[in-house]
Length: 207
Image 1 (cartoon, one colour):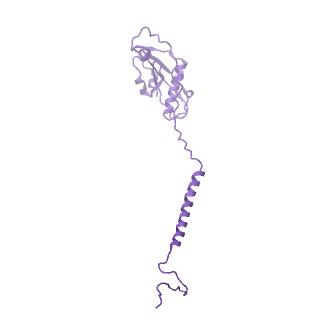
Image 2: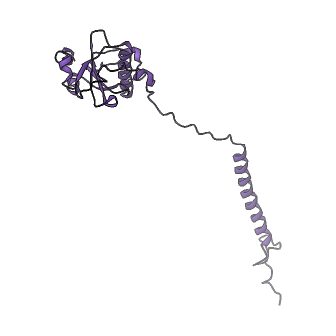
């Protein structure tokens, strides 16, 4: 009796593969194709990394508000007339110098820039003649003498214009600092100054 289980005929009566025959050749061929494909991907990635332009990270620009030079905000003080005979709390009328007027303008311009006034410059803040009161209050020594100013300022290029009046303070040789503006700003002034200014300045009610 013939062994017909060992071989089957193909639909065309030709020989066919044996059932359960060895398929290792197909498996090796499939493995080679998969391996070649994976290798191509890896090579492509490596080439891309090597040839890609070097990434450059540029730090984001940080908006800064440059303060005026210290020499502009801190003009040299005249020797105080009360140095050799101090009475802390005593007020004095002070002479307004051009360097003081410019320092007050610079201080206000800086304050406006910090509040979003862009490129406001010292030259764009004008304190008209006759619109500024300047005085000092003695301290126990020169390191705590207080200098005060109140005035009206004309500011170009700012809408709405900052309200008048403006009040500034300086401690000893420190910088002038703008403390406030508007009708209530004068409330920050030491009342003792009104005695040497012959009363509360009329510009304190200016808006």
